[in-house]
Image (tube, rainbow, N blue to C red; front, side):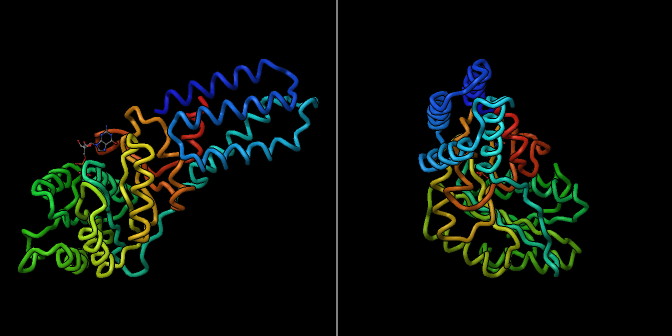
Length: 300
Ligand code: GDP
């Protein structure tokens, strides 16, 4: 994960540790190298600028030539800044006071949305909840079948248009609305709605998901984004957030050779944190996103 970035930091910090005393020039050089490393990792330019400025500010007060290890102090500052850039805190999920708690899943086709819906259902089960998966992605013919297969894997029921809740025309908004009543009937306290994937930001589908949000009143609206798409992932998230109030992002494919740009840019650019992360194809490769752990891994 983010191997190139980790290698760069390792190199920068090894040189820094080798210096003993630090001059202001040394700090400038480190900041220049960090700036380059982040840009190469495809981190958004504004995020990089802010990152470097904050690290610089924090180093100003340091006793660079003092007795305490100045290199380690700089490294600690960078570490803290990385955690903050990744969102700082791990999300604490809260549940609707009147069940079910609804979670809306949106995303581009291929982002891993359907898989993430099932993984999230499994995660909620692990929290002692009783989730229900709703197939409201009626755009892609195979999506419902895929969700049913995944539902069996994680042992969570799936409802969709070919069930009783389908209504007359199998309209996704109607399916989602009926699914809430169905969840109450079945005693399911979390409802995860897999909405239509799309190839690009599509106004018609955006309107559809907005209507689904209106009738289901989700506690959380998550956008699933593929970490491998770097800056594009962030642009997608910005556009979705403008059309649909997002609560967070689910970042997928962290097991691939993503450079880190998406993970390190989302929070600042979109203003919404990474809620969950997926790092593999298996249903268990999924958890809440922990900024501190990822920062630790990046710094090796
Ligand atoms: P959707 O079109 O957004 O619903 O995407 P899918 O859920 O069908 O996922 C697209 C592909 O990405 C599938 O082959 C998934 O197995 C794969 N995938 C999803 N999440 C991950 C992940 O975290 N890591 C890896 N390696 N593959 C993933």
